[in-house]
Image 1 (spheres, one colour):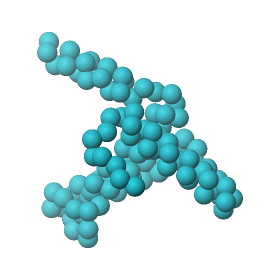
Image 2 (cartoon, rainbow, N blue to C red):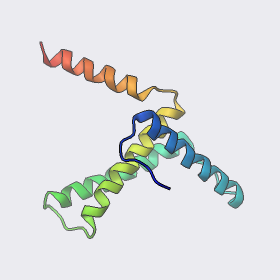
Image 3 (cartoon, helix red, strand yellow):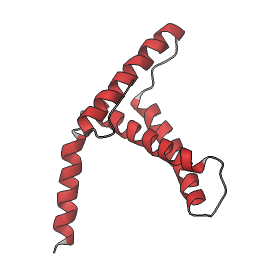
Length: 110
């Protein structure tokens, strides 16, 4: 499947939800349990640890094979989890992000 690299948060969220639907179908076939928001969060925490190790490798503090390939992968996994959690909790992430940027800009321009 071809995707453009320029997508807004809504489009990215739609892709995440599509993949989640595919996971749900697969899990029905295998009787596996669908992840809860708490399990998504726990997976995200693990991914943050992986990202930390990759950043340490990128900055020369440790050696890791395939660091250059895995760094974008870990960042994408985290974005996936953030978009999924925002959707699960009914959060308009675009609005929340823009509100946060406006708050920071206002605070920093004083």
